[in-house]
Figure 1 (cartoon, rainbow, N blue to C red):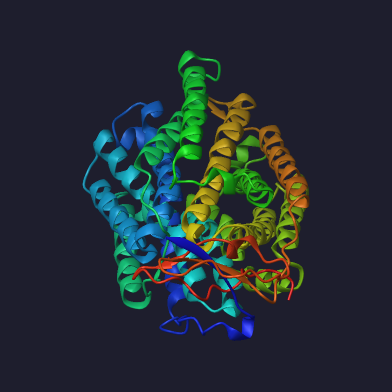
Figure 2: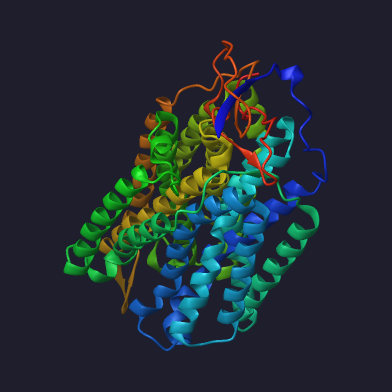
Length: 526
């Protein structure tokens, strides 16, 4: 087997099979992404009631939320790699099916252990988002790809934001198990639409699935995220917290050494260490911190009683409606991202988005005294987060081989999840340590809310600095394509202008034929 390098002028490339049944791909995949993102905030309206509903201690009830987070973090890179190897549509359907099973389990139980199991299965579906981005990259023409990937990438925030008011309304007027029946229905609808309207991309990555790497990464992530999410309950200096953090370092280092030696790794760490990939993933963590901060602060501020002197005294439903513009705005900035990125590139769009986030949090320090002000904050932050999230897939795709799209975007989604986990832990600790006593209850203080906004501002400014060091993506008129060939000898290599790194790898069709037409990544300067 020899690899041959093929160089063709853009006008000589055969027309890729991307016109076939592509009309419904974007809305269907975006709907699937929104559906799985709903799982993250589905129980937020009833989280304070979970100890009573499940007849358990408050510390044990939080496992219902933690299980979803851990499962989502573990599944995203694994499902992305499986999609690259065995078909992204197939793995997307499998992810949605697992989510539906988990929803039905949760809908039929009040037992804590069974509920945690079902919630873990729901979180497993988070791999659908990087899989959807990969399908779009394989199936859509270049002129539609930028805005489509932006919408798919933002769906994690759109679903979370829109779920809050709907879940609150259901929880107030129906049995709380109806939330899980609704999520199961959404999952079944997403499966039916995906099966009917989304084709299976023919591209496949060479190699086999790295089972040992998958188990090692899963172990390392669980050991890392478990103390991060439970540290406030266990104590940050307690033996379990420090022991698990130390064990996670050991596990991830050993996993990394193994990945560097295996011929077909779950995560190509050499690719991940490239400047453009590494800095994009680090910036993603900062954006994740900023995104989750507003989701934690505004609902609590809105629902605190006015008797506190700063609480806004709104109902659960009204609080959800005030925060919902966060997700709606993220959805509507996708076309704006496409226009800005086409002119200036995704690096500029990422930096612009993070600058808008910083402005939103800075202004929010003085805009926390009325419900309409929280809506304004949600709109500004939604625009910034939407621009930032929309830029991430284009930056990743522009830096990796087409055969690694699913795994690379899965890892990037994981970085965002780590950011939200860190945000939840740090801001939860801040709110707890700055709480004040009102009657017989401890409630968050205005000081805690403002410190949380300052933390989010600091995180996004760090992300802005990281993004400034990203290399600008330059388009190439003569893309370089690598393909596998069993019978061809080495072909002479002609000089060509710099091409995005995404074109410098091997991609094969599921029938074994090499891919001959991979469009350059979107977002570069035309």
